[in-house]
Length: 389
Image (cartoon, rainbow, N blue to C red):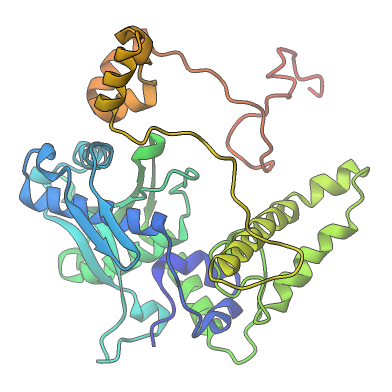
């Protein structure tokens, strides 16, 4: 049975017991996951067919829960991703250039499919180049279509696992050459892209860690170690299969809200409980929508709103008959910069944005101390010199 997926490497690396705890639990997926799958499929189609992007608008990808219809926004975002890939990894210079490649990871996880073949992971784009000195550099590109949070490529466990799969997949190309790697994460909906370059020694070190962690997941007493990141997508989180996660959540009740140091030291725990509460609300709503009657909570209608029953054209005609002018009937609102970029495409937008767009800082928000963003209340940010020096 396949249990250790490359996409879940961070989870089972941090919590080996999570693998057994999730066995047999249904993965219901989500509309966001389906949207991501559709975007990846669209990227593969656009790469292989090379048709004008307008040709793909309206194409439908069916899922059990419904249909994802390709719109102009998705086409433009996928085009941005493809342009970035070509900019960093041009096809004409490559020894190997492939899209949606299955690479073996079973030699790391120790798992096979039912037919005995090693399990695999799928990478979005692979490009291999030979330098003038005879060394090899491998480029691996990963498209993440979500618009939740930016993901960093630096020491990204999923990409490191994929890279080891690529090394195995390319043994016939690499042979005894000096090899280095560069991995890219593309998030076009967040205007984000990050990359990280590393050598074979770094990959070997991480692969050894993955092998050890994979072995630990098969121990009968594999430990369940809850945490904000590893519990985020764990199917056993908050259930009787993982009492450790419930015990961790209960710890937040012992924090004194007057104790600033305690609040700071338990920042990860606070985030953990926030996500717990959000998951609990979602589960309650799911049960009620399925017809369960529960004490203390019920479903009610949200705030109502008024909408026209007729089409816009019919509404406009009737309002004109009542004496309203066209300018009174229709409201005009300029596109936001974000929407303009989606319609124009990144390349054209960047040419215009310099003189047209101003970046305004967002409202203050909490982040971990090791977050890459600068502190807005540091001495430097306030315009003072560092008095500690």
